[in-house]
Length: 100
Image (cartoon, rainbow, N blue to C red; front, top):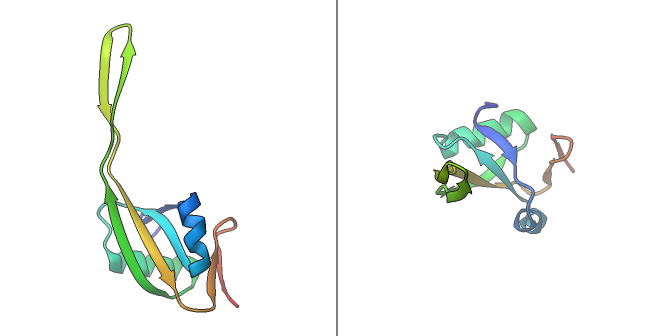
């Protein structure tokens, strides 16, 4: 299950929706919603009410080097927006889940 959830995303938007009992995680691109829900249950011992996923395409990056123009692309990323049951939270910093 550790390969499904890669890392929690701590951005301005993610902290804003954290007050609505939602959390954002970067997940494996081939993971589905059922696998994400099971990984959340197993790692943090909380129940997910809903799981929404978003796939973001990689960006094209260019840079000038001595050999000429280098063109590359970043990898595809997948994010999961997880809504928890009322009264349950995840402490992102320490990685533990709890019920209030």
